[in-house]
Length: 421
Image 1 (cartoon, rainbow, N blue to C red):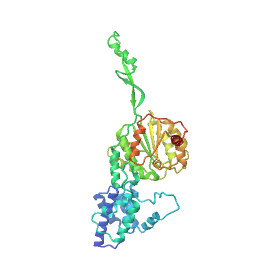
Image 2: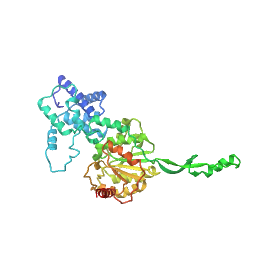
Image 3: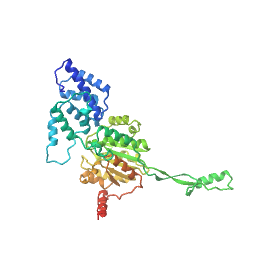
Image 4: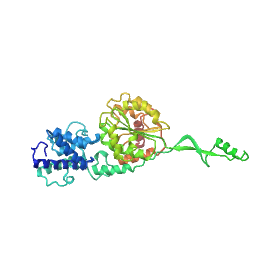
């Protein structure tokens, strides 16, 4: 299936079939590839020609990839399907023991959806593969797949297959997270209210000449506070970004006064794009407007932009802020503590959602995490469906304000030790 095979009618026909099969693999891996895209890809190849593997790569990339979060899936599918000579070297590098940390880096970790998409069951119409190819596919499947016995509710988003992600997407769309209604400074008329409305009582008494005075009563208006979401879309969070955006879209459609922002090296307000009822259209528009997808992280700089340009607009009336990030900052926490302190003092409640908290041995040892942990009211994980549902318990109770400068991590560790003792 090399793109450098000699031209000819038979070879051209086989190459077109290979492009069709490649499109099927992309669709099985989760990319929105239909027949129209396949025809566009064949026409693009006729126009650009196939001078090298790189030419074929970027030609198909221009047709099949329209969002930044699709690049990793396309890259893995391409190099496996078109038999990248360096693939064996990369796989051997994964399997051989190394002296580095136990977790493979993001660049080395291949995607499970790609492995499933390129198995024989996912490739209809293909004949029986030779013995050497079977062994290679079994080896790939052993490396790339995970146990299917885990429940979907507990499975990490990065370990889900394409079918499981589709199921999780449907469950997230039906997700409802209540926020407790809090008393405001406004009152409204109510026959059983605890307070007497003097102004309304006087107005009503004037109608009868003041002979009879009926007391009008009022009660305090209760309303859920605004919800502000700040979501990290940097490279270290790229495996969770799409599911978190689905979560943000579900919250936006569930209630009013939801303000959504994403940040990597810059801050982008995506509130109006997520208001579209069609989640696919909403995410497409977000992908068009966000320019720093899967890049670096400048948490301090982005929070400074938010505090300067947006805090007075969206943090009124006791807003609740959900900060979704792993705390890994390219600027090594420069200015982050001051901005976190200002953000904490500007809102009613600050909740930090960190997918790294799913590890039992996690410690906030990075400079960014240390600067953030002393200025949050709740510290929760967000890596699977159950963790998203657990937010209902957090958001549906009265806010517990933590004193400024008191590390929530140290307080929780002390409470755990006290219970253990």
